[in-house]
Amino acid sequence: MICRAKPNMLWLALALLICLIGGCVSSRQETKPTPPRENRTEANPTPPSLPSMAGVAYDELWIVESPATNTTPDLEAQAGSGALLTQRGPNFVFCPLVKTSIKANVVGCIATVDVSQRFENPNREPVEATYTFPLPANAAVCDFVMSIGTRHIRGAIRPRREAEQIYREARQQGYRAALLVERAPHLFTQSIGSIEPQKSVDIEMKYVEPLEMVNGVFAMRIPLSLRSRAGEIAPTERDGRNISVSVGLNPGAPLTHIDCATHPIEVQYIDKKHVGVLLQPSDQIPNRQMVLRYQLAGGPVLPSLFTHAKGNGGFAAIMLAAPFNAAKGPAVRDLKITWAGAQVQTLSPGAPTDLIAGRSQLIMGRFTGPAPTSATLSGHTADGGEFHMEVPAQAAPGDAIAMENVWARMSIAALLLEQPQKDSGSLESQITRIALESGLVSPFTSYICVDATSPTPH
Image 1 (cartoon, one colour):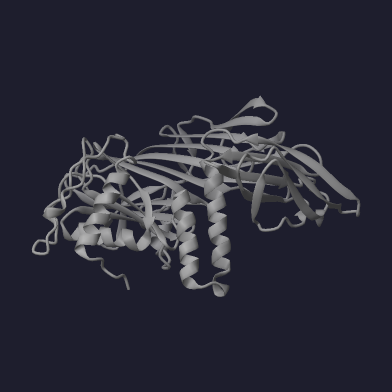
Image 2 (cartoon, helix red, strand yellow):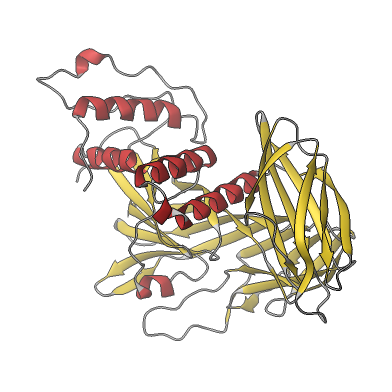
């Protein structure tokens, strides 16, 4: 049961949130001061209206939560490569997809994927719509922006109970509210609310995903299929003129055998460790998930070490790959890591384990002070010999937000596995702190955003 906050406290929290969230919306303008306290008296506990912000609208409230319930099979089946759906009776009706752009960047074995999609409401009346997008099982959404006409909405992470309370109060005051829900680890569902006639809806989503090597091959899956209407058979091809896909590969080791059996691609070699991959332009493309596969060239163990500095510390990611396919069993036993030049707390998958031939292993760490300059790997080879390798560190390119998000997701997963041994209050506190710091949805946090100027009729 969710306890309702007192109106005064709730209004204060909402006002503070609005001031904080104002920096998240695209205009990035400064907020005006919150209303004076005399507007919130015991005789009039409900504020007359939300305060205005300079050039920023915020009558819409967005929440992302992570409930325990599973998604309905019908809705999951309609997700395809991202869909905007309205429901008429028992059937879903699609809003036309105008264009899709997917840009991915792989550093080490961590992929950051930016998805941009535009939909239209062709109807002559407003429609209530739901946005769905299928995610890889290990992916985590770290940013979500929606634009409807001139309105731009971006979510900010807040503790879940606090977000739910503000959401309920906004609804009661007549403000437009919507809900973004992670119904399963592989499907995000967004209730958008009313979309005006002839208006377009632009979705921008960012998610991160750790990739895994199996049998010596890395595989990255990108959802590109379009679903059919209820009762219809999905076509084998789809329009390829309104979609673009680009993938940058920087695994930290030489690349080889890049291919895509599902779709035609263009491969652009920058150097032996940096490759760009494009979906080949075509009027028609296969109506299915795109699967990009690649292998790494080199010795029996291929390591890479990337670091990302943040404040007085940062994050480190070691990828270990053992690509020789003929052998089976551990390639390196009793693996140990020694960090040079930094204090690193190794997190996932906990203490380094045996490195299995044909597989990869991702080890995330959080450091304080300066970033490590290198890491030394030691252990024993499959035939009992000594194994020793020094891996120089390199700064992760770009904003490297993926490293922090993957570290946080792994940390939360590890804490949830320890749930029976931990006090529930302590567990919630630790997970909430990590999720708020990294901006991730968790069982105890939600995205919330306000973006409008005045209430709308119920």
